[in-house]
Image (cartoon, rainbow, N blue to C red; front, side, top):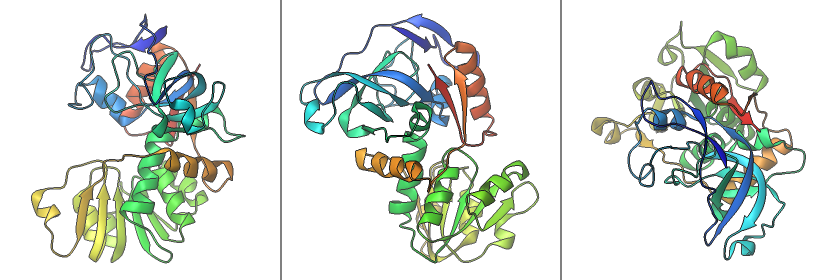
Length: 314
């Protein structure tokens, strides 16, 4: 099959269109014809050689990166039919963290565990589905579980316009919270359209100077110190962008934790319904299935100036 792969790690690694072996579904897996995939920060980290075990356990070169995907089920592994999936189903989901070198989503086919995929709701495009899994499950788990946001709470999302943050602010609003978000001035109007109550321009304003006694902070940019200043005593900060220091983890007054997201089909079903019903909106930029487009997408994501998600469509 055709895939877009790298031959080495590092800034000078180059994406190329290559032929690799088609991955075959094992027990509890389905084979999917990939119609779209999205680019995540962890993809960039993988290309740069910044990921370690378990991600790299089954990697070799040429390496096909990518975890998010949407497409059509074309084959079932043993027992996969018990999940309710069938050949021809439109699905979206995320590949295993430690996927094989030929089983990234930057390809014509991939195999996925049935516990990590869901049927794509009617009316949603493959691009919309591919933009949801990692960013969506990260945001959804942070707001609904890790922070357990409740009506009337004050929540700050650091990095509100990114792929994760833009979904998090909307899920928090759906749960009845007062939501503040940090973002550049170019994204302020978009966040207000999402219902964000207060947008902080991080270029000119220190959030800790204007926000106080917040119930929860969701950090997607790696600025734990500022988030802690915004929190009230007994408040909770969840980060997906930095590792809390020992002192931060043992703060007696405030709770700090790194979230490693292990989303499931139920999370994807909930996200799909939120988007299909119009309660959560997406900002998606689509690009073609070419090495050049993937390379440019990586540069944009690495620069952290992407609003929403970049999705490659076939």
